[in-house]
Length: 291
Image 1 (tube, one colour):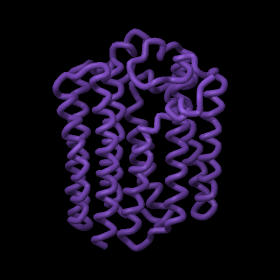
Image 2 (cartoon, one colour; image 1 turned 45 degrees about the vertical axis):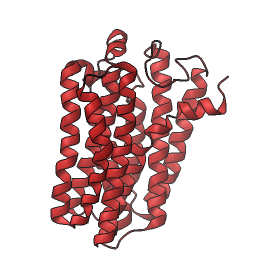
Image 3 (cartoon, helix red, strand yellow; image 1 turned 60 degrees about the horizontal axis):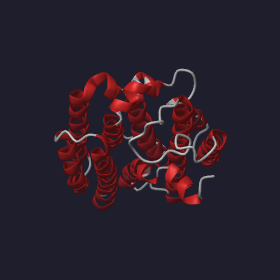
Image 4 (cartoon, helix red, strand yellow; image 1 turned 60 degrees about the vertical axis):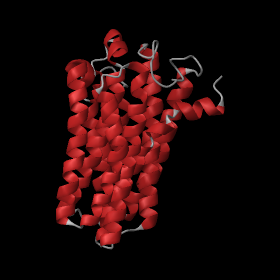
């Protein structure tokens, strides 16, 4: 049986910056108008973290029972390695989803009931990324859904539950955060092109090929860089603090651009996650200071 430490590693804690970043950015937008509500921000963070953990366990389960993880290059998977029964990992995924639903319901009750629908769709998207008979992650749509749910929905949703409105400029950080969340997945799938090809997992990276995927990574980080200028033009130039994220992101780009493969790409994933978190923290701090 898996140990407690192995269950924690199975939750893939290094991916959690992708859950924290949109809440930081969305709260920063709310703070710009002095509309921040800290307990709602905390609940939004809890929802985001639980959804991230849930989707990580769900991917572990679904990829494991399909045999996709039988020859894995990246971090340990519970089902693929045989450390945990598939049913136990599936139960862990739905426990996380259930807890996220409860926290999300509290936000909906205090804000607007239509948010229940947003939460339900988010959970379904998390499960069907690799779950079900035709998972969209196997069809090359993973990056699109990550952009939508860990970028647009997470940032704009965090802003809305606090400010109860969506200013137009809120879309800029949502796009930037979404692009960096996609970059994490692109780096991950770039590493897994050989094994995913064998397993029949037609990710976007498999479809684009090695060179196309590396180019996509650079495009996504460039988009994040550019939208920060647009946000600064509509709010305050303090948000240039977000460019601190490009210290680790530049290092990650160098790894990707220098044709690193297999385990050599793992640092690029970690650096992209750190970069996204610093990017979001800079936006939050800049909007809070400059208001």
